[in-house]
Length: 391
Image (cartoon, rainbow, N blue to C red; front, side, top):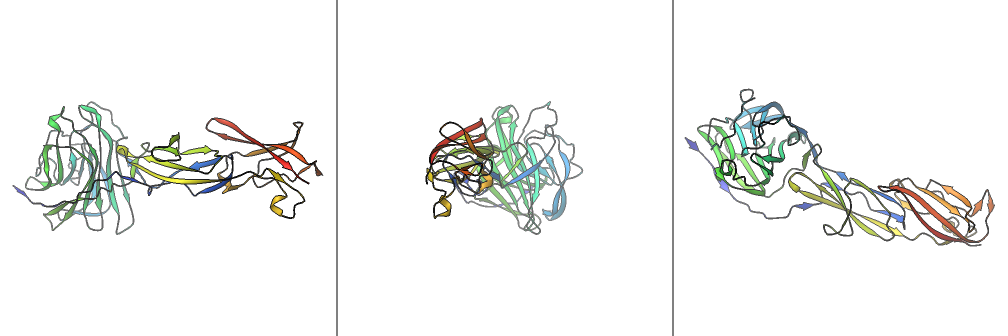
């Protein structure tokens, strides 16, 4: 029996919060009280769901590039629901096993154990909401990402496991990102194994994690090949791939501050109508509670309270509201009424203003009421004010 490993440690404790993976949009400028549509954009990957059931290996799936593992080249892989990526295809397909296993072993030949621990409960119908994969990037820097997203641990269903196994084309390295591997003492003493296995004579394991009880949160491990029968293991900065399976991404919008500001929506888009300049924050939550954010400033300028159709300044000859960019305004309509309640102007074009006329005839100087209608999550909303026509 032979186990080879070299180990180095790089410890990094951090609350992983970034604004690089979500875009809240460009800053905008609007007249006070106008509706503005805020819409966030997710910049990460969406994985292909894997249909599996408790314990049974499924596949084969295409890696998308030639990958060298223990000196041999593979183009396909299989997924074991209990945290396994195997190159032993087609032989391992349909194989089912859940008891604790140490590295090296011949139970899971040519298999990455990242980490291996019993997940899900039997009997269970095939599911496709927890496991996913995706090949991303361009040659020669492609990578295969295989992930488990909040998978319930066997006999501890309230405990969720979230981790990723990443294969890198450029140097045949493997990165194992563990977002959450909580304890499940109720099942097999919480024993789990993390490492790379070839057969019952050769394997490399993360020290202290060879069929032992352990937990881990927000950490990454890198396996670099050093010839056909050896890998170095390095604890590296926690930088998980930004990827979710379908339906696992959630949104929140905050007003004024983050993360302590008022939550104004849990949708990807929200309509706001600030009367003063306000910063809004878009937050996304990925598997295992990883959160990323970006902010947008809505700069508010006053709505004119007077205008003169005969002004020497062109901008002062028409009463209008302002929005830049205008395409962010949501279902805009504006009406002008005189002091007797008669409607004398209407438009659904924010670039069109009132020139102080009715049917082509100049209106009398005085105070007029403007009303803006728009729609948001609560239906039709109204803003209104007054403007003085000066001559």
